[in-house]
Image 1 (cartoon, rainbow, N blue to C red):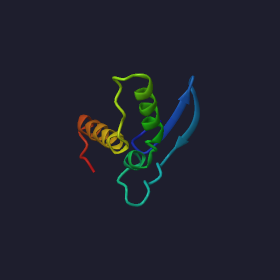
Image 2 (cartoon, rainbow, N blue to C red):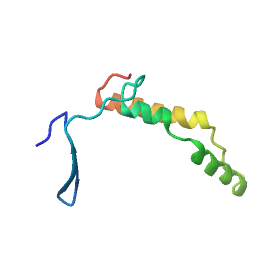
Image 3 (cartoon, rainbow, N blue to C red):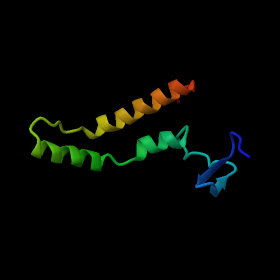
Length: 87
């Protein structure tokens, strides 16, 4: 049984865990996705792009704030596609 307030993770037909009521997001964030976008580390993606510029003269080094802004834009697009207001 599932509704909007319960989440179950299934693997090969077996229920691994169920959350009946998702935890509220951290203070200051409208959702866990908002928190994830703002808190994830951009360092690895930036380092990988830096490495690519050393081995490929046509590669472009990514800017860490632009990486985060791209994630924000993707989250907004997901909300728009789902018909959910942006927070």
